Length: 367
Image (cartoon, rainbow, N blue to C red; front, side, top):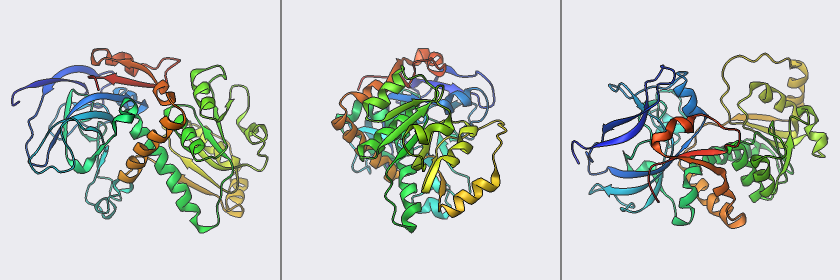
């Protein structure tokens, strides 16, 4: 395999619109603990588009380019002699963030890194998965059962939701907390997967987004048993009344990427409520809030605000398990989330959002 080349979607970090399909070296297995994975498909998200905008992204040391892609799904092709638990033919998803040696990283919680010197595949200091093959180590690869292979690329975004929900319940262990109602802000992949997770646990859930009620995203939310409200028709402040929760929501998962919505979401919490923030907002957005009223409400109402980004191995494992649950409860619903599939040669189309997009994937090969 030495000297072989493969196709990959690469960018020059910091350069706008530098994404391109390139021939890059296909490295052979270099150690007895390495695993060679053939990429099946890679999910595309806003992070990839922002890296292509030149807003951030960091190439590996010594490399003039960064291979994009952090939502992986592939199949093991070859394993080193010391690898246990993985065999050629196994379906796998890969962890995104890699540890830097801080105490939390050494405890298996690189998503809670203290020092900030971690690397992230396809984002920061490490090549991503948008290539025909990639090499990884067994501790960063999780097997996916064949039953969810067709939607395994959704494991990474679902893991973010798994972590958010786990953190909410961890925060409220300080009291007897039995949430009765939930609100999901945003109907992108994170928001829709959050709605499915909450509904699979029996929690009445409202999904609110700017999109119209007659849209594919709205239908997906409703087919998962959630109520859908269009923010183009109903002001955000009216959501509790519209959902019949005049006292506010017990649990709110924010997945809009809009800092204005983030601030307003804090005012929609009920007593003992929790807001989980999952989007990274950029730029500038001046929003007027009454800080005194907000502070009083949070303190007197025992409310909590937690942020969630990336996830660790337990969240990834739980995401794999819950994909199987979703498939059982709503057959075919997850597959409908993969709204557009493009070949590597059309990667540029994958980075350009279309009105009916839910989750766009780049297809490298058959399952």
